[in-house]
Structures are given as structure tokens and as C-alpha cells.
Length: 287
Image 1 (tube, rainbow, N blue to C red):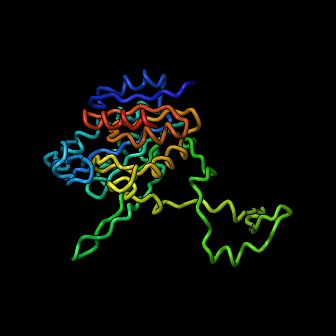
Image 2: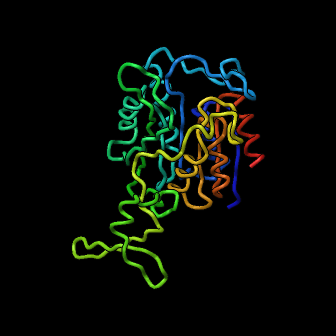
Image 3: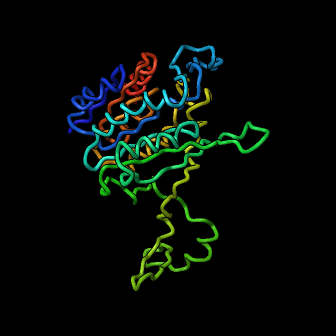
């Protein structure tokens, strides 16, 4: 299958059917980074200028949480219906709405379809002086089937063993010079190689937002709340096979599409913002 890449302007509630036709079938991954119900207006930075004075990108004021959820729920239903049998939906939010959205998703999918969550740490420091500051974001993962695609041995889902562990446990060396350790559990012996690293957990701290949100890097577009390519690369490689199909129904600056293109996946993005679609199309063309 040839890699298909398209950006569709419009509301995903109305355009997901078109996205399915463009892709040629259901999606192996639907990743959505919707507004966070944070309030106010979002603008895009041009050059190194003040983002607040830039071109209008989107509004994030919904008149309260209930109205925000009323907007989001039918769109999440459409996203679920666009999934392949082995596909997964990733919903990226923060503390403002993530807990209530999980309840909504439990109703849309059934609680048994909840596969876990990722805590993403963008790397921003605290601004609050009184009490703890919530500096992480959460990605909820749902899949209709327990046999959804999960490439657990992909290098993007591995991290280096801790120095203490390397020193204490990896004392054996095989004929090829690779250091390893063995553990026997339930009568079965497992071998772990130092150079393969360990599987990462559910807290991701190594995909800093700064890569996408400072005018000092080539990755940034100036679009508000742009996510780093490293984050989307990991999600895409973890949940799809080569030539798989990816949908980002609120694609913003197009990070998901660029990451999918680089990974050899087909992808379709949808966004209501003409500004977002223009930026996304430009990034795809450059990639």
C-alpha cells in the first residue's frame, strides 16, 4: 500500500468518514490532542514574537466542563468507530478534564477496553507558590480488543538500565561480548541483555516539550501546544506496523502526520483551523 498522507479542513465529527475513504480503511491508531478546556483564545507565534499577539489558532472556552464534554463525546464515538479491530485510541489531556473524560470513554468503549495511561512530563517547572503544581499531562489508551497492536520490543519503548543495576546484575558476558543477566521465575530462566535496555514504564520524561515550543529549534512551528516529534514517534511505532494507518482528528500543526510519514505509515489529519491545516500541509510537504 502506498503511503497516503492528507490534511482535511473541517470538524472531525463530519469528516472522519472522508478520512476513512482517503486512508482506504480503518485506522490502526487514532491519536487525539483536543483542547484542554483551559479557557481563552490560542494564537500562533510568528518568528520569535509574542505568541499572544499572533494569528488566531483556536478557542478553548466552552462555557464549563459539561459543555466541553458534550462537545467531545460524539467525536470520541466517531473516533472509536474509525478504529481497526486491533487498533487503539489515545486521548491526550491534562488535569482539567482527563478524569471526567475517562468516565465518558468508559461509557463509549466499556471499562474493559481501558488499556492503561501514560503520564507525559513535558519538562516545565512549577509556577505555583502555594501547593503542588500539576506539570504533567495524561494520555488515556483504549482499544476494543485486548490483542491490539503493541510493539513492546521496539527500541522506542526501551530505556537504558540504571547504572546500579548494570553494575550489580549484568556480570555475565556471552561469546559475542554482550553483557547479560539471568533470572529464574516459575521454573523458567529469562535472559536480559544490557545493550537492549529495559521496557519503559508509564511515566515518560524523555520527550521534552521544549523541542516543539521554542523558536530556537527547527522543529517548532509557533503553533500553540505543539507536541514534540519524539512523543508521537514513540506512540506511532508502539501501536502500528509499517504501512499502518494513523488518524489525528484534531491535528493542529501536524506533528502526528510528520512522525507517521517518517515511520512509513499512512496518515490523515483533520482540523477546523485553516491556520493549523496550512501549517500541517507545509510540514508534510517538507518532510
